[in-house]
View 1 (tube, rainbow, N blue to C red):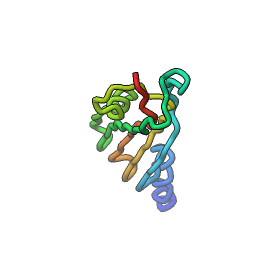
View 2 (cartoon, rainbow, N blue to C red):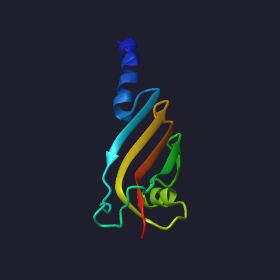
View 3 (tube, helix red, strand yellow):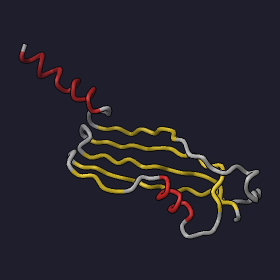
Length: 115
C-alpha cells in the first residue's frame, strides 16, 4: 500500500501543478483589440513587428518581470512612431521541474502603420 502511494505521488503533483512534471512548453492565444487596416493609413509595405514581454518565477517563492500588453507593445515599437494594427497576441509558457522555474511571455505581432 505504501508503494502505491509513492507511485501515485508524481501523478498527483502533475495534476495539481497544471503543467508537465519535468517540462512544459505551451502557446495560447490571447485577445487584444487593435486597429484594422481601414482605421489607419495602411500601406502594402508596412513592416511586420513583434514585441515580447516576460515574467518569471522561481521555487514558488519569488516572481519578477512584466508580461503585460503595454510592455509588449513598447517592445514592438522600439521607439518608432506608428500605430500597430492587425495585431495578434499569444501567450507562451515554459515550466521546468514541476514549475520550480517558470517563464510566461506575452508575444504581440502586428503591422506598423504611419500615424
